Image 1 (tube, rainbow, N blue to C red):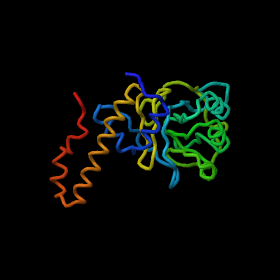
Image 2: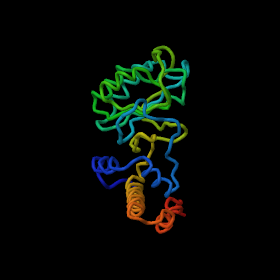
Image 3: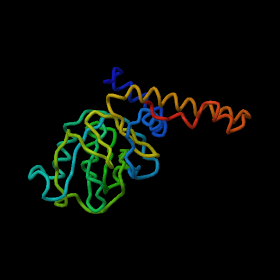
Image 4: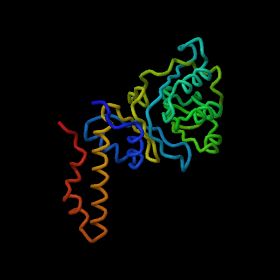
Length: 229
């Protein structure tokens, strides 16, 4: 079912949750949405939530002759909407750069809220200075120039094997990254909010003297995220 709540409201409500809360919602629905190995690239990297604006990089000689990887990245940013999260599928490569300071500045300048990379990036100091959140698999020193090809944007891509379509929601915080399919945004949100409330109730009961195991069993904690049939 497509989302009926407007995007701004969904972003605001998801922003009140953590990726663990939302992961529980995905688990309940049996949705694979947790790409592994992608993390904030510095401490205090801000949480980001928003629709995916996708692009793909591939090995040198396997992509488009034009534009180059650098110019194609700028085209992808220009085509995105304010509030989007730039998603770069570079196949998890750790030996070739995927992003950089100029395109990072441009991404923020055009109103995108962050970038998530299945790969590595350089110029982290520049992102930090901008206050622009970037999540990836690590850092590298070298330029993107003449080391990979651009394969396109606005297409279905992957983050560590998890499919991402334009418009799917991306959420990233200290715990990692999630992909929420656009047709499940409201359902996942409702379940995640319930899971958060349940965990807060358990903590409150333990704080007030309840026996910890009993507090968990009271809400059937072990079955809280069991996938629905």
